[in-house]
Length: 226
Ligand code: ADP
Ligand code: MG
Image (cartoon, rainbow, N blue to C red; front, side, top):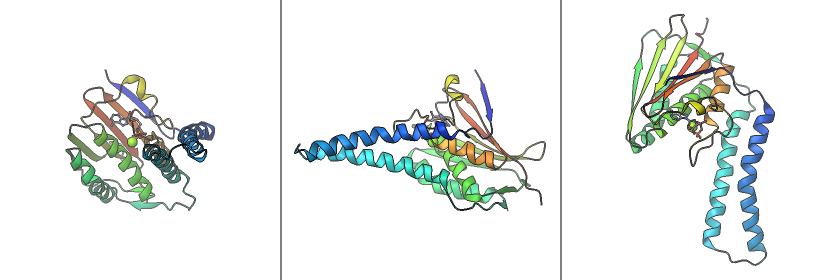
């Protein structure tokens, strides 16, 4: 079956996010508090406890780091940019992770791509999030194809196509929900951030996936007017 999903800026409900954050941070904090109290009261200072505490701290740190991307206080500056160099930067940034996973990344870039009006670091963040998901969906290797094209109505389309395990229909509607993850070490924030950034750029993100065969993530961005 083929499932289609289209949304632009998904998250505008601060309450949903706040509840998610509170929940995600409370769990590791509860564990940390428990171990700290236990040792404070004279319990044994076991190496094993410290190891758990370290990993809980790392988890909190990871959540905070990803949230900071969302909350960046400085004014963002939009500029007219070509996306090809941004895509190239992102691909070289993820090269070693892809190699480790035996994943090959292949770019197909049409000539005469429209430029977009964008904050380039934010767009790169979106490309990284989508490419990483593609790589992580192929633990036994494979190919991620990246297509950049001009659409029939003059917009920019960037497609990331992987050969990974795909997304079941019932999970498609949850993509972009804060903290929705199926990964043991996932944050479940990558897609939420991506939807938000693309929404702010007047763009959209749509998923098309067939479980067992792979996933296609399609970004559409309006062309910059001069
Ligand atoms: P994370 O990667 O930390 O889990 P994301 O927001 O990036 O968080 O993705 C949320 C979930 O969406 C993933 O855990 C996974 O279940 C699913 N997903 C996203 N992209 C893909 C993909 N290319 N292939 C398979 N599943 C995906
Ligand atoms: Mg991710």
